[in-house]
Length: 404
Image (cartoon, rainbow, N blue to C red; front, side, top):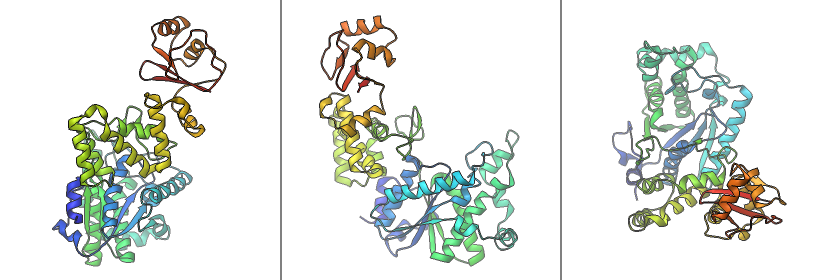
């Protein structure tokens, strides 16, 4: 399938300065895609755009993946109602390294080059930058940006010169990569359109060159109409220290029927036949949740590797009754211990329920046991039973305790 058709089918088409998408099916171009190290991890919002980038790479285009250590020192003000707090140089440096490692995971096996904009900004003289770059940027275009207008409006909080200049700094990234690597296309999320256009203008004004921007739309939860990518606990991160592999897997396992096929088009490399099979499953047997399980396995494997995805699926199957607790390995039990309350061996069932705060009192525990609402490794239990081996206690359908 031609790249233009692939992007259209998967829902990656938003705004672009390209006169015709079929241009992407012809001569290979050099492009860049960037992420600021505002955190030590990307989110699944960043992942959506990164998956678009993979299709460009697989179509033969040359990729430069930028980590914005320099721009990260300022922080993108677009979409922010007030001034950002500046991060320390050490934190930004650590975040830069972390984002670079995630690039390596997401784009494993692909051809790309990671670049860091601090490498060229650290040697730029301020006066030279104003003369050589700032002189070519009309103030009217910068003042016209929506985020500037909202900050300077009657109810705005104001904006510093540093944040006001952010788009110019990002624009210079494009100019530098155009000069050094022949980059003529920037890929970005929809929220980066304005910043990206600055680079196109700089290349035109200073080099009399032609460059373009291609953006992908924000992913919308079709069942709610809101931006996709958050749980009740907040953002879904790619770093397992911020969103555990199990929680990451569970997020995808619980996506809505209405949008699951669309999410699979964006977040996986599955082809049309596989997506059609997912759509048939949702239509004919939604309770089986085949589509969600396929999506969860594919995305978790991509981000965390197949082995950890398999472990998350195994732990899930034990918690919800498809497999026996005894089938878990030591590593899988360790994974489980990070997700549910843990009580030490030697406790009674009643004691474990109270100690873990799954119930409020001994009397409540006894009432639930009498009502057969408590199971131990899937079996009904005795009130006075002492637990002397690793065990999974389950209350109702969704409350668990690990005794180990």
